[in-house]
Length: 399
Image (cartoon, rainbow, N blue to C red; front, side, top):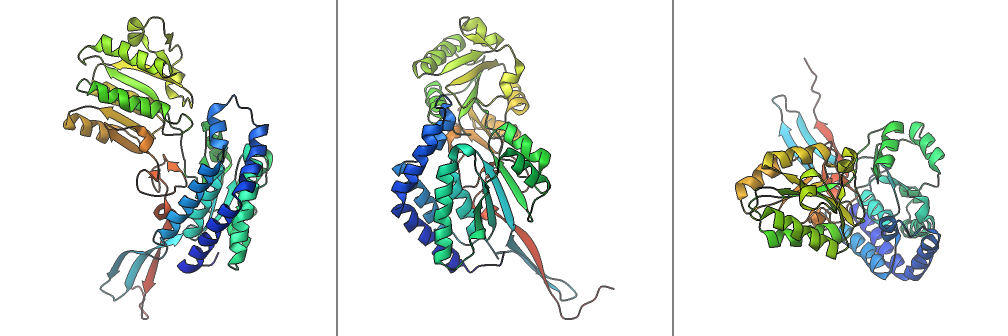
């Protein structure tokens, strides 16, 4: 796709905001068709599927924030003149065509597309069948905005394919793909990695940990735990595992206190052997695989560790590499934890719920990357470009 001027891209985004506002009733009605067909027993997925007035307002706000951000394309990353007078610039450039595969959330159809388009990328959107009606009307809004500004609708395209067709497309794409971002559970990610022929940037599972150190402020810890666990269970930044240091003052009483606070707020717990001795009536963790699981539910695992090092080792062994928190009053311990834990975001005395593009000041995000190439963390506008070398000469040859 050709490079577009910034003002043209922003005009499309301005058009899109107006169209979303004017068509909000139709968008919500289309979403209701999806909600009526969905099995509400899967609360996390159902919550992600809902589109209401507040969600439409959020879509419009996401577009506005991206429109106001600086165009990431064509920025000089480095520049030098060599002894042979060659002038070399390293500049940002679009990826080309990005495909995102995602489940349930119709607002991804807005956030992913606005970011990709502003960064001058074509985007192929493969949403889940559970959001079919919602995604179709949002795609039609995008196409209307593009047509209003005399641009081809191929810039933003919803892929109408089932699982078998998607698998075949990944193996033998009918057009050039430069990057695929699977945004969903482990099965989806494994499916894409198995079949894709181009670069895949992983937006991994959550399974986030919080470690209460021996020097933690207990009241603060309870507040952070509750927020991280219960604020939004369908989010990938929600808390699933809690480790309590056995050397904290009043250890057994604090474990009982934590259990009561969690239960009083509707959170069920599973306990390891050490915690089970204090809470014998709670469900025991029988299978080690549970430590790897992202729950997306009102439950969590509660375990005990004897040292900071043990907490770090356990988190690095089982977490999804997304987010991890240490609760401690000791700065040195916090820095050791943050340096040693291998996650995209590490926290000191704060909720994992802040691992989000908007909350971190990045703005709208394509996903939270748990990969290490080319970026880890929120994939915002600045992360949806690659680089390109521009070499200016005057007849130089290599000798």
